[in-house]
Length: 210
Image (cartoon, rainbow, N blue to C red):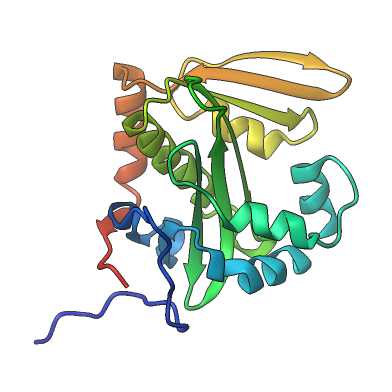
């Protein structure tokens, strides 16, 4: 019986210099949802615009802390063009549709990076946000990042739960309704145990380069 073909993006991809193929994953997540996790590429611009346009106003507000119905051309260019070292973004796709984005950014020479992610409304509660955090932390460790920082609205309980239940030792502060969380991303016993529990409910396999 022939091997099952991996999920592939429909459009022919264009790989920029330094594109890390080793971060591509085929995933079966919570509830049997199957999707592809991979680094973002500049040719994802149209997918990102469509993804953002179809987010609910509430989801956009939770991510950007303001009403932000469309992305500017400059934002699209910045979000899709990264160096895969100090700035890295991962996307989840179902067929050719982008359904989630997670990223970290750090200043050159720093060991702390800012992390953020957003999941399409109908794909929330499938564990994609937590998977993005796990994969971003793994990639960040390999690139010399030692800690993550995240800013989240105090009312965004779902996002706060993702960070606080990941298994990292999280510290937090709040100012004017915004919670700032900081946590080291080293592999501790607590994190390994939490990760093992999550991996028992999902299947993550390396994806073939496309």
